[in-house]
Image (cartoon, rainbow over all chains, first blue to last red; front, side):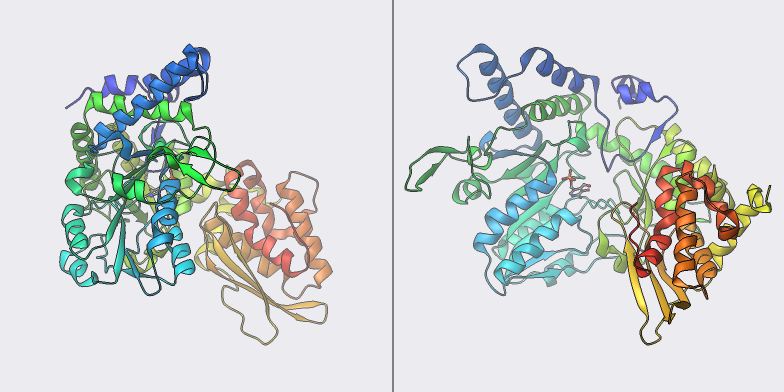
Length: 408
Length: 146
Ligand SMILES: Cc1ncc(COP(=O)(O)O)c(C=O)c1O
């Protein structure tokens, strides 16, 4: 599929920590040398603001910056680069949708349909919209492996549903939702569809036109870009016909002292203030790197790692797997009788980085029946050897050993 | 050298207090005071309960979800301060915090709780070893920063 060793050689974090098994990619991803080089170049040779200067450096920075919009457009198959808004990450993007579209269109008793497994960033903004408008939230019933039956979804849809907001891939269980069909059904009821693709875009091919979603959000850092970079995709008319939640320099064409503001067109009207130029450049570079490997290949690689991990973990009777069947490279588990955080600390002593917690999806307790889990999450640079290290450490884990690990 | 310096004994005490925590229940006596302790950096989420008879802590308990270290350290805390006066309990808690800060402390006051002294070397677990203790301090009118 691709040369693992070659891929790994492009990640300085791997070179600099040869003994580390990094399995916390759902939290954030390592950076490629290509991306680091692009950002470095900007700092060392290219620093200037964009769209403001009449001199060579600024013109180059502006061109490079604008070019990333095209890169992102092609990457997610948007119709136009005008549908790409740069944000600080998925959280900001989702808030932007809630505050620009949600606050201005929802009325009392309207419904926002979502699931109980959303990340806080795709639920708290909707709580605030409900508070302000009198709309309410309804949840689609979910199976305890995180999947949704299409019939349950159909039954949950009705005329009052104005917004359907859901994670493409859940950050807890890694289920890839059958969005195309759901979106089609939601549209039949006239709802606007909001996709939290923070755990999807880094790992698999995403095609917004094929999905036909109205809005989609993702973060740069989870696909190897710098922190503080992200994308809000919106169909052009939606972006153009709604107001941004933030005003300032760069987003207006002109204004007068009476308070009349003439906003720029989308996407620029959503980008008030000096943008995170280096962040956006890093996003372009990180995407180019992923494209050089191929998103199909990356997804296939992660699926294989996941299947391998499941196959090796299933014989361990003391390990409880919550998502053996989900496709993506997320492995969510507990060890019988040992608290998740103790498991994670123990793995840390073995130089294996995983995440313990409720992963921000605080309502999930009711679905999977536990308040906390350990999550190992793979990316393109992980290998079967990484999974072996994880499984070996889990094979002879005991409560005694966990406590000893905490005591040294 | 105390027996609590023995790593195996320390481990067994923690195991025991994790698997069979002492005073792990919700106190529902009238006039019980409680303090909920949760943090955004970890998943421990516990509540400490105290009931006073004059200046004396006549009952103390805790409930909630916690890792081995937070559960065991809070269990041991409740044993230590039950029946003590508020002032005595405060002194015990301060000695414990000093121990974790690697400052001088009186091991006799802390008894079994001295097994947590090495936790000060695992920065990410200090929170666990102090969550119940900070909750108890709050109920005694003391604010202890993390
Ligand atoms: C499913 C999901 N949505 C949203 C977010 C928020 O992303 P960020 O923190 O980069 O804004 C995350 C990150 O953990 C996530 O996993």
